Image (tube, rainbow, N blue to C red; front, side, top):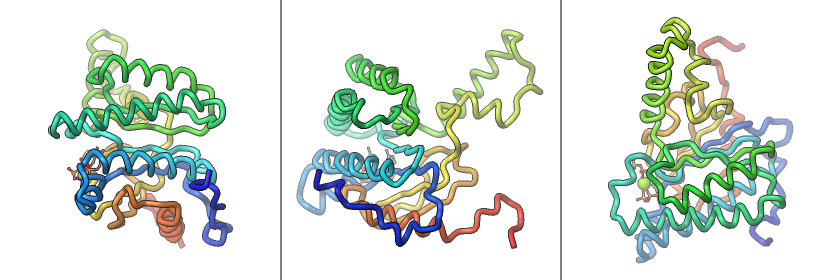
Length: 248
Ligand code: IPE
Ligand code: IPE
Ligand code: MG
């Protein structure tokens, strides 16, 4: 496994915590392909390889939760051919993940509305989730995910509980609301990375990112590597997280 043989650079990590939860907006696949005169779909295939590499590396250095933005509620606007290619890469990835589950020992979860996916892809997603549910390290794949959509769904679920007499408006707390999100039970991301030079959230983890640290880099996702991740973690480790308070 040449790709994963590199040891983590502990000279950067030494004495410093690795973020418990890292989230990544996997952006820049299309531009990576265009630069090479390739179709956008080739960029997505390369991005998928980077996902494999970086998720393995996160596990290796002790990250407990790894969340990736794979397809947004807005990405359906793209050409059917591109959408199909992304979904087919996801199918391929899930088949592998199911095959290698016992070796990898990673719990796979999905954030997003999977009902719009093909029955085949949905079945693979269900199988991966069910078969990996007892593992501790967790990978969350955001697929047909939108932060606003997630918040609206949670609000709707709570409103339905109120209408049915199961809850009262004053029962709604931040914790109760969080428990109705796709991310229920998952701690908020400590570090959110966006490659590709765009400096925006594009509807990613709007609720959960209230106090996340952001790291932006111009590197396109298919070119993102272990060293880039270490750079992001080093930047994270140099920050002072105050949560609105004051630290000496
Ligand atoms: C991210 O890469 C992958 C998805 C949004 C599915 P893009 O396809 O957005 O790549 P760029 O931003 O066009 O370069
Ligand atoms: C965000 O990237 C979504 C994913 C990476 C899956 P986009 O490429 O869709 O975001 P915008 O359009 O640049 O904001
Ligand atoms: Mg993009």
